[in-house]
Length: 621
Image 1 (cartoon, helix red, strand yellow):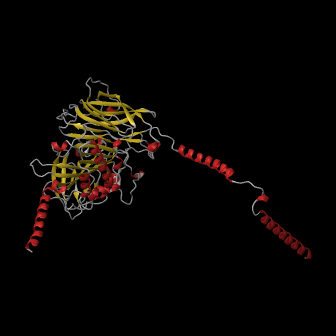
Image 2 (image 1 turned 180 degrees about the horizontal axis):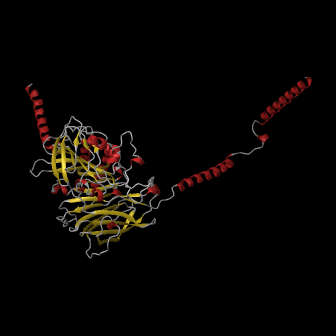
Image 3 (image 1 turned 30 degrees about the vertical axis):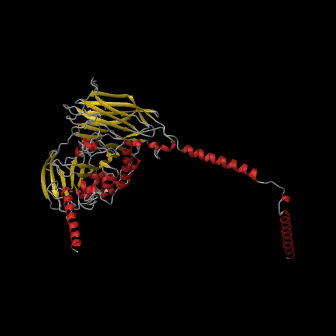
């Protein structure tokens, strides 16, 4: 009996020890960073980070790490995952550099890259297919359409962010896929919120509303999973980091919830610059605001912040939930009392608040005149890409890359992932450097020609396309001198698709994935055996996607041919069938002709008798 009593006690102690060990490495943090931008814009950056120990993850003991995603990664043998959902265009000229060091941004649509463990490339492709299909069902997206024609294996562009041993790196395969035509909407946000511990019910995730998020001028959602091994030799952890970034129009976001459709401002409410010579009753030039617009969390997001998530780890690190980056003189009011911590930030001055889990929180910024604004951090490289040429057979691509620095050169990797029906001519690839002395943005339109004898292309990796099997993979390692512009051009040929390969909106065109640009630091080295630069920090940029018109047939003609053919067949077949099947005989030879004739005579005789009787009755009267 004593043995049976001690057994449950021992199991309880073991489970308690495992829970204590898991809690020592498992934590959850979240933070919201608000930054007003010029032209009445507001950048809101949501960050959620949770950890799970490697041992508990392998034992299916999930605490803060989402079980649904963890089991997919285990089944597909995925060691590191990066997923992006993006819409809109980041205005670098007015908004400065992108948030999070340009590391949490993706191309337009959906972008996915991961390190899959496999012994051969065929096994890696099979596990990649399993991963994309499972993530498609988890996030309600069309990731299952990332097939071999949309998958590449980058060589120089991406590096693992997590900690991987040299032995494990030998069996890791990097695969990258894009879906530029994917429309990101609310059905992708709901699974994203379900991965969080508080699932949008409390904490900063309670501010995420689909009506506000997808009405933003620019928005991106990111999911990053990577292993992290501390330097002190403690147990490794598996970290998942979810980020949501959006640029909201403050004036448009403050409309009431019963008015979901944005409507133009009434004429009497417009603030016009009357000093303009072209000002009139039918034209209005907007007047520059001399004061900061008033706003609050409740008005911008449509709801207050529902307290802090009770599962947030209180260990003194990142304990402040909401931070706002405004000048010192900017007045900020809190509707609910919260602990305020002032911090110095690389971009200015931060005010961070530690929120109570049981009280709603709201920040109010009244309208105020400011003598100075926060300086914007400028990007290290400006990139523009467009399609040139005309006609239905050939075309060209032109990428204009400008280094705004006057003293430092820029070394970067340029990655193109093109569909198989867009076949570039590699011999037409040209890289021309010209001095850029005109101010932005005129330098992109008319750069001053000053040829440079140095070849900007240092390394190149090219893998041609195979019809209906794989797309074109092009990677270039480029170096751009200070205050100069690099114009990269090449020609391509358009392929003719089969009738069933055209989408329903074929006349709109085909989306081409954005180019991925990896900025390398000055300490980066390119002496790797596979040509990749694996040392030094890096930043990432994405160009806008391209719209490629292809030769499109007249889809109404098949229906016209079907209708005409069916009509001719019906007439011809019906006439011939009647001639072959129908039998022609005389009336008196038809079966039952005599009986029919007798009935007819009797009926005619009866009619004549009725007529006579009626005539006789009329005479008697």
